[in-house]
Image 1: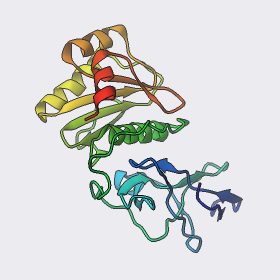
Image 2: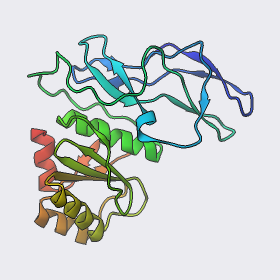
Image 3: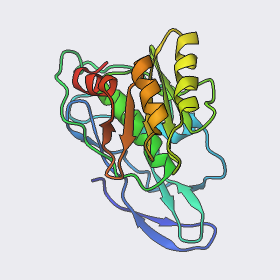
Length: 229
């Protein structure tokens, strides 16, 4: 866990003590961005994928990777983006020198409390599977959030509605047009028709439980979870 910093909400002037959460690097070491104690937090008015992620270097293996930009939700309703020292939002630089030929360690879950947490969990899980350059998909899906990586399109549905047959088919068609594989993550599960269609199309389906561990719910997902990308 990183050091705590004092944060003052510019909207209501409440004082908070904040520590950035840590995430597991591919080498297994915890990684947390270093917070800038001198800079003031920014009020988050509108989200963009590039600004939601920040590039951080792992102190153990030297790998540079993207992690969620630290944020704090004030009780007054204001969301604050906490400044990070020495790094800035940037595209994923790719594998670090210590990543090659390393076995996968156990996935470290991230508790899901918000829709953003669900997207973060899916992105971290895809990275754990071995996919690189994870980003927001160029084509927006009919529901949920679209993610993309090299040779992959993924859909994350953080709503309380089970994913439908149409949702699965739309993702599969998008993948076909891009000559890519596809993966679906749902917080509320899938209808029976969606699961049957996914099995016939070979679409891996995962359920995001609130502990932050994606659970495979069909054979293609079991295989992907076992073998990785």
